Length: 231
Image 1 (spheres, helix red, strand yellow):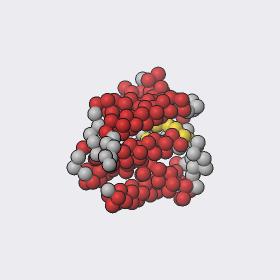
Image 2 (cartoon, helix red, strand yellow; image 1 turned 180 degrees about the horizontal axis):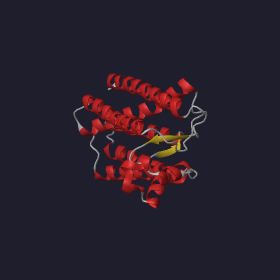
Image 3 (cartoon, helix red, strand yellow; image 1 turned 30 degrees about the vertical axis):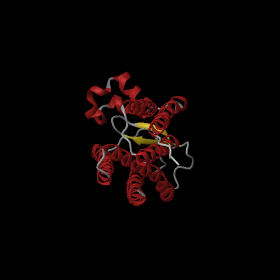
Image 4 (cartoon, rainbow, N blue to C red; image 1 turned 90 degrees about the vertical axis):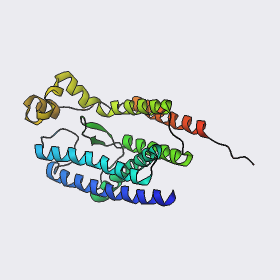
């Protein structure tokens, strides 16, 4: 396990370096006057390329997880472990390259699928630590997750995603932008509203409820599968 974890950790850190390098290039091209989460019109080709890159990143992390183990629950564990290491070191590399973020409470554009995710840097980092803990427990105990485990994990994840996608989700729902999602960059109404969008204060209470549900699932899983050592 130690050798596997080391190999996967190195892989995820290297991937994070590549990811952060791409973001440095994008910020130099479109945020030369300073990074901001405020929407800026970007070439459609760049948007499509960025969406493809994000999808490819997930595929790569899952692929390496499949190589690490044949069992489905361990593959899941290795996947979330590599994802978490990648995400944490993504910010570490950005700090090395461009000294950003200055604070863990600075807001970032976290993801673009299915809508833009927004939130302070601390939020995804906390999620990553929870994923590392969950992965460790699954690999150490080596027992399959049951339906109740998945329900808690899914509910917690959906609650957290709500906080990340709230601002753009609300923008899309209130203005019906879902109907022409493939041509938004050519929609002047979307450009105007997205450019003037200012996120609400991050919903830490709701986020913590989601994170708490995930941590509760870890505790329940560990207690159910704990096997005391007989003397």
